[in-house]
Length: 387
Image (tube, rainbow, N blue to C red; front, top):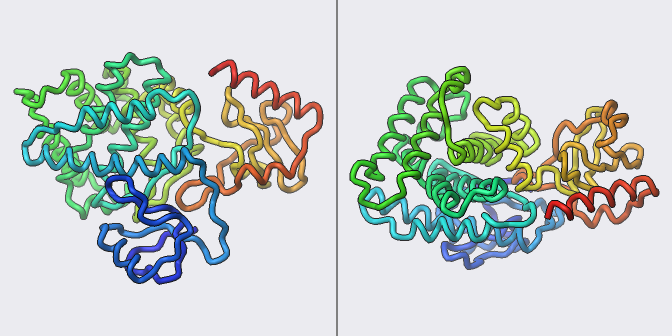
């Protein structure tokens, strides 16, 4: 799978991901062969590019939930844009609450983990896509942390609005990689955040937002503006703000843009765990219980230099699953201390759009002995009890 900019698309290329309109209607299915007319349509949609399958590459496996997730991401993105456009025009964002409630209805009450597939971002649509992804992640985390309904709504609305100021950040800054950002660029971003916050009219609150929404947005802005971790120790953040801070960074690190490649969910969780003063350990733990970090079928790099495949997740510790070592065709239980002392997971191997490489059907070629089967059943029993 490769990313191809719109200007470089050619007839006969095969789509790796479906394309939807703003109403969520599928315009082009996966594996569709592009035509000259289709390429023109893609350009008219304003897409900077799309994912294309290699000539002999099989269609990656996608569940119905995965397909619906991509569809809803598109619908929600256009709704977020409409809301932000209205706020810029000082008009009532009358669909804001319904969007937040829809996100909570679909993703803030799940009884299972889901695959959080990312979308490609450009400086033109970053604000909307980031807002939607952060809102979905925050709603899922809030559910795992047993937040009451009213708190979920406030958190989700704050997630949709806290980065409103990025609409005013110059493209020349948005197109820079994180390492290229100067202190002056950071000052511009902070000023734009304040400008975006002012759009919500916190003084008169003419849009009748819950006061907690303003508090959450203010707290996350304080966290983002505080570069020195030591300075964070003297600041107090609410549970909702802690959820937003984690969701914000997880989305930024795992999303793909033209100027920055994403890092894996495994590396992202490890990074968040390194800085508990900024990223609440309880929230990071809740996040790891919302989405698949190392799902069944994941191709992995091992500390021994070998490659492996996850054949059974560990609900207690995602870094200690049951794996198949490709080199010796043996199954290893990484929750066993004796095994873990010699072999650990370094990272996951991903496709360009951050999907797992191996599908579950591949795993049916392998069998396990009685000890392995017993451990697998133990994991299944623990997972069932959690539900």
